[in-house]
Amino acid sequence: MGWEALAQWGEDVDLVEPLKGGVANQVWSVRVRGQLAVGRLGSRSDADLAWETDLLRHLDREGLMVPVPIATSDGQLYADGLVVMTYVEGGPPQSGSDWRRVAETLRELHRLTPGWPQRPGWRSSTDLLQARTGTKVDLGAMPVEGVTRCRAAWARLVGRECCVVHGDPNPGNIRITADRVALIDWDEAHVDVPDLDLVLPDNAAALSESVYDIAEQASHAWEAAVCWDDAHARASLARVRAV
Image (spheres, helix red, strand yellow):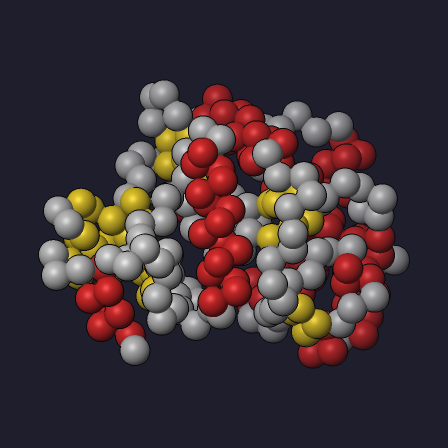
């Protein structure tokens, strides 16, 4: 249906302007009932969108600063691939202190989501020790030697407790103000080992040397698999050490 779906949020709605950052989706600022918001239009399934919107509402209730889904006129949290969420003010991290606050926020996310169900159709990194596909991952498309290296990196995570990970805590997906840290763009969120979120600049999460190395290698392997085979994926695979 496209952006015509925005009409399901009522008559007082308008597209404002496109926002940077949308790759798999179209992302626009919108105005809904006089409120500035963000609309994200994509091809994710209803089950996928239900998982994401349920998660965001849970995190909001628990006090984590996240975009909150705005319901349609008839109370639905998504419609025809479109999700409308509150607009989050702030800017990206600028200092080591900012990144340490980001690490604290990510750890709070992890603390709030043990036992959370996996995002429909997704796999965790350790699932991919056996599985070959999951959402955007198709290990069959990668070089055999590359898959071997990735799986060796993920094998070092076996036995770790899992929870929801944001999946992409880069500066563009973080909004900081003086009194809070917000995480936006939950398109890559899924259930996995939490340290994958904590490979941050200057080791802001204060991981031990060995834990950081394990997480960094597993993260490079994930980036290679989930993006294969663009330039970023090939660069990520090059960072995964040979077995």
